Length: 102
Image 1 (tube, one colour):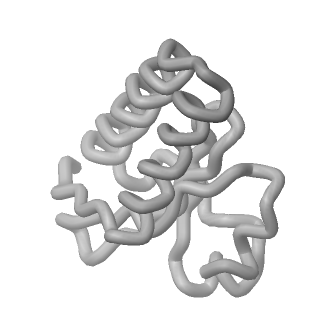
Image 2 (cartoon, rainbow, N blue to C red):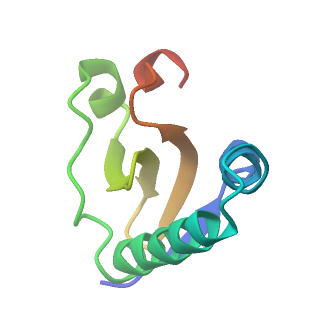
């Protein structure tokens, strides 16, 4: 079942921050480019099979329907809306307490 994919403003801000960090702080445009490619691959997987990734282990996030995909050191949090839409809510560093941010 295919669906539409929406990117929340918070997720866009997260991605901009990650790319900025990789390019400016790490001085690695190649890492940023690789991350973008992997993130786009994750999006394609969500589009083609929205339930592919598991619900979050955190009880609160799971009860709200949040699913978690891992892209390198980052967590992509998204929720399904009906059978035809998914929204990427946040893209956060994996060692961060992401459950407390949502």
